Amino acid sequence: MSSKNEYYIGIDIGGTKIAAGIVGSDGNLLKKVLRSTPTNGRDEVLFVLKEMIFELIRFSEHEQLTPIIGLGIGTAGQVEFETGVVLSGTTNIKDWNNVPLREELSKICHLPVWVDNDVNTLAIAEKYFGNAQQVNNFVCLALGTGVGGAVYTPAGMLRGAWGAAAELGHISIDFNGYPCNCGFRGCLEQYASGTGIAKRMQEKITTITDPNHPLFVWKEKVEQVTSKQVFQWFEKGDPMAKEVIDQMIKALSFGIVSIIHSFNPSMIILGGGLLKHNDWICEKVSKEVRKLGISSLVTPVQIIKAGLEDEAGLIGAAYQAGIYRETSSFLSL
Image: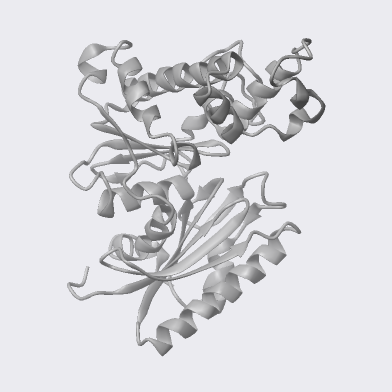
């Protein structure tokens, strides 16, 4: 890469919001724009993406942040990395399947475009600007609405046959466990995601029969219970919330031990919305993991919180343009 500062556009596509920005090769975010994720399907999402790109290009020209080297995108779902097609996306975005995202956006911005899974872009940000700068073997787990994974090796991101490796939220920790919307059973995501935590708590609340129970009032609006409330009730000492969070910690610990046994990483990085106000999860899980598994594998592994938070996905998405343009000739337009 060039020694002088270069500029890239990055886009982080989430189920509720889309963040886009201009990032320098030093990792600094110079301009950020946010939009709510459209609910009417892919055409509206693509329209919003194009508007955001044009806004950033105009800003870059006005501020003389040129030339823009390329555009990188991180999105939930399974991405065929070589073609930039979102083969199967998130249920939070309507019709986000078989979307030729690279092709659609390269038409309008006339830049090289890279598309990757959003947890892979988190891992890229951590590798170059976060807590994994000195590490060449690490795993990222993003705990949010779901559980996403990424594996970084000395050769770069582990992608598998076409780009969908490291769906770590869908490793099973219980073959008799809860059915998952992926078609499997007992997936880590069913216990350690915001959605899973809320579901487990909702199930417990429906069993309350005592009208004097402090959570009895939630029976009639149980579907409104969120993981944030579960953590709040846990902190106040509610026994039901404690059962759910204890189960989450146990599930996450077992899942991480399986991941360590599989990939022999030096570091596990935990990120995502659940970690934002619950730093203690890393320490608790780290203690549990050291009680389990093959000692020579689990003992040396650091389990830490992501060093970059809200902008990590955006920065990592943008930085694809810096790290892949020299090694991925098939991506040159």
